[in-house]
Image: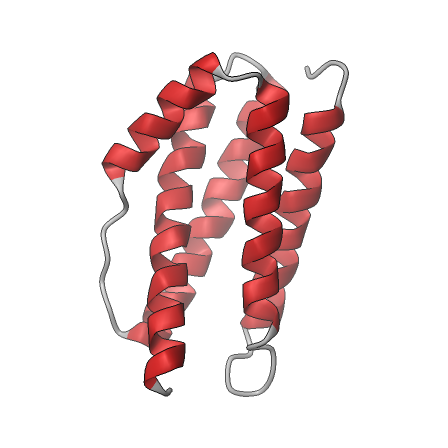
Length: 133
């Protein structure tokens, strides 16, 4: 792995770890079971992604706890449609970043990309939903 790819993977690994805490924080806050389930599932996927990336980076990182708390505060005060739209954009961006690594060298990247796009679709749908259970 060249230095450029290593830096990109470390950045992605940190983003995945931060996303785990963010989704866990949102799951603790929400009263809506449908959202709680979506946040919990996304957190599990993001944790798996971080573990895959750590295999390539050989680096142990810690999630940004302060960022998760700040995002939890924002979650409490912002309209959920805006929160979910922002999440969807971040997830689509993550998927796009993994797309260029699909191939024999990094066989897990295609699945990770698909997960990110699926998360993007899920949270985009929540951003447009009239009512969430």
